[in-house]
Image 1 (cartoon, rainbow, N blue to C red):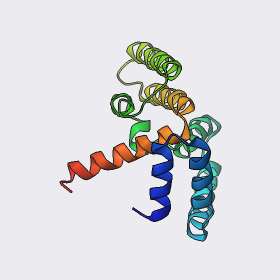
Image 2: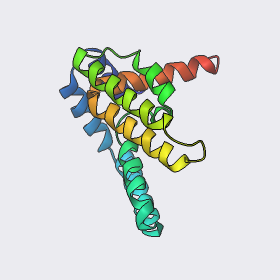
Image 3: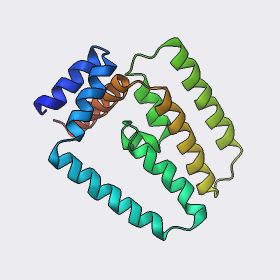
Length: 157
């Protein structure tokens, strides 16, 4: 792990959200990261131009989620997201809000027909948005690190 990334992880473990934010901002402003972000942003802007009005709103929600700090593989998989959240210490208020979001998601998706994939994606995005909105920067870093460790173990390394 790069020294800067290690500093972010250490700040996250200490629960120092201000330091996590500052370090992440500093990392994102490096030439390489800034160039990457600009390229990705330009690409997404070009994609958005091709979308119909009905497609633009879900695309923008998805785009915002990509920048949320929550690992991308969890954003579209509610079961994996719920399991991953057990690796992060949540306050009682966060638990209450997140449990309510999962309950709402479960209620919404039970009412959907199997072939209604667009509505299922919208419900998954709403859940991911609600959960991401409850997490502190340090918790997002720890969630990302837990996912990184999980992938490493599954690859046998």
